[in-house]
Amino acid sequence: MDKHRFTFSELRPEAGFNRQPYVRLLIFINKRKDIPQEKFHTWWRSVHADLAVAIEGFGGHCTRYVQTHTTPADKAALTKYGMEPLPFDGMGEMHVKSLDDWVEFQKSSAFVKLG
Image (spheres, rainbow, N blue to C red):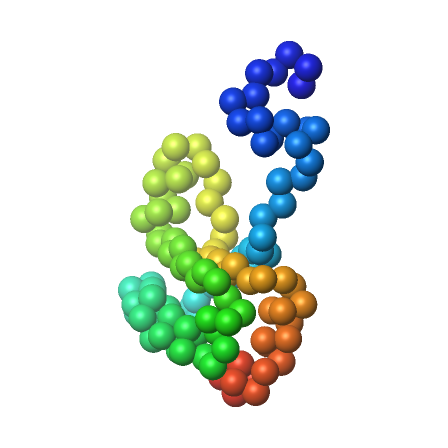
C-alpha cells in the first residue's frame, strides 16, 4: 500500500473504516421445481413485491428492496464465458438500518401474518 497512489483519499487506511449507514441483507432463493420459470419470475416481480412493500412498517425498516432474477439463459451466458453461476433463481436484497431493527420488524404482527 505504501506505493499506491489513492484516487479517493477517503479510502486510505488512515481515513478509518468506510462503514455504510445500513446493513445489506441478501436472501438467495430457488423456485419450487413444479413452478415454471416464467410464472415464478412474474409472480415474484409483481405479486410478491407488492405484498412485501405493502407490509405495515416496511418503509420504516427497509430503505431499499431489490430483486435480482436469474434465468436459465442468464446462467448459460455466464457458463459460456467461463463463469460459474450460483445455484439460485434469484436474490432479494434489502437495506435496513440495523440487524436489530430488521429482527424487530420480522417479529411484528404484520410481518408474521404474511409468513
